[in-house]
Image (tube, rainbow, N blue to C red):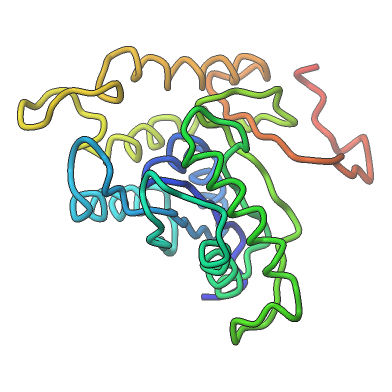
Length: 238
């Protein structure tokens, strides 16, 4: 199970699906191996339980096309940059040795989201240190890419997910206790509102429109992109 192509981290089960689910589906469709890693089990969620969230996240991972889904079992609502939290990131990264890592944007209204970003970033760095001992070989991914959470950013690039749009929505709504408004067993929340559903769709539509597509997902990299041949870069939307 090592040397996978892509690993995606999310603070909570469902964060990955919302932030970069369409791109992961597109990569899986192209034959790339995907591993999803949740930081917490969702025990602080208003609706559902740890058990229902585990079942929902497994169903969503299947829809995404992931070959595995891991959970680091940090404390929901209290993610902190601690040695233990970073160690769990190091261990899972050294197990799968991904080429590329997606992680949450480092600014967000939810403390778990921006702290998860910090934990993952620092864990990725430590995973490459030879003297950081876990009983595993050191490894540091070459590519680290941020996806959007609550806050938006000016993306470095946008991925056309028009062909993956409907399956992304299926993966999101696999979390029926989180997002489906048509039941009376659970109290209604912001996530079950029509406005939230509209917002998810409109964001994808907006970023798709910037590249001449129906739907898109925007991403950010720190630093600069190296281009060997400008003729191979798609400037069609400029």
